[in-house]
Length: 119
Length: 114
Image 1 (cartoon, rainbow over the protein chains, first blue to last red):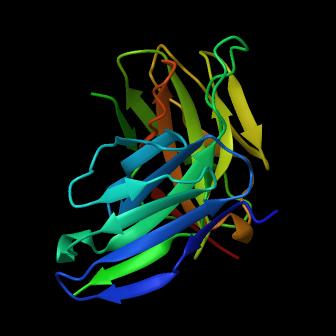
Image 2: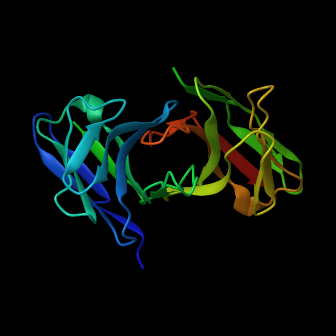
């Protein structure tokens, strides 16, 4: 059981290049998230997905696209990288909350992060 | 909007010292509150959580009590160890079904010296 894994661990891009970050989870979680972490700003949500084939914008979605073609994978794409996208990117996943059960605050499990440098 | 304000770091303590990292929040609904920890080179791990007022979350000797009257969720530990050196994030999530967004504080870097 690997939990949440991210590929690659580190990448250097030139301005204008494109790339895709891959997140995979083996916990059969319905929800998946992409965050970016910047110094002095904590983590900010980029996009998230509540199920296969569905995605939604988070707090800072501009310049990013995502896809959730399979339940276990959540891809984050940068079509034309900019220096402002230099950051550490974290993927997370969680179970779907069940209204009837009253379960709130489902734990989000995080991957180890991808460090991206855009020159 | 929702926000989390936590104690600015870095914080440096000697081993066995008492730790407090302050966290206060602003939220329009009734949030669940979390503390996450990030060890060097790793992703975030949930440390503890509380889902309603007066709940106390605890784990690995750390505690935090959900105080609705002061909108706070301060993290405490009675005797820190070198292995507690990490960055600690306070976070909240509004308890509206379908809203899965976690709002994080900026993080507090803790260094414990032997």
